[in-house]
Image 1 (tube, rainbow, N blue to C red):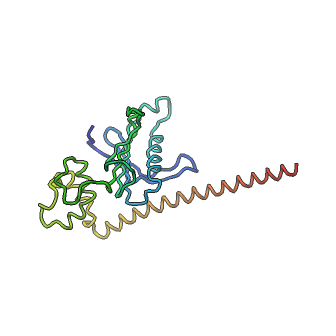
Image 2: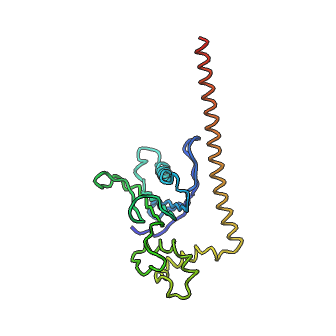
Length: 231
């Protein structure tokens, strides 16, 4: 079903317990049918990326369950869209739809889906835009090559015709950071820094709590050991 309208959701989340991780999604959206879209974009540092995606999605899933006997009746699908600048998997192709299935390929649940995109495997080179026939690859071409094409193009003939489509033209205009004035760029940099500091502080609190817990457990163990020796 097509998406008619999206609303931006809060992208910071807190762990369910004091010892659980907190974090920040790159972006979270909800559409007019209450479907949830988590968007993650990764330029590098792919270590534990798949594990992080699983945590993000299932944390979101658990947080949407309401109290009461009918708490599971209103659950809506969650789509995690992950876009990598490079590649991570040994899968063939650059676009992968991953869902919960059994060994015969039957859908176990439609509530969770990962759309995993590896731009490092994108098959179309910068001059091959005329070979692209679907809108997903038009978008991915734009994400991978737009900054190079726009700097090299001397005429409209050197740019893809699909950039004339309203949705891509609007995206290009909004994503062109060169159109930002210094104040707008500074605000963007400050927001990115703020989010990084938030994650660092939350993870430091968790690590400090773990250290205190280990110290307390060790003291209890040593006290019990000493009591057993004196008995």
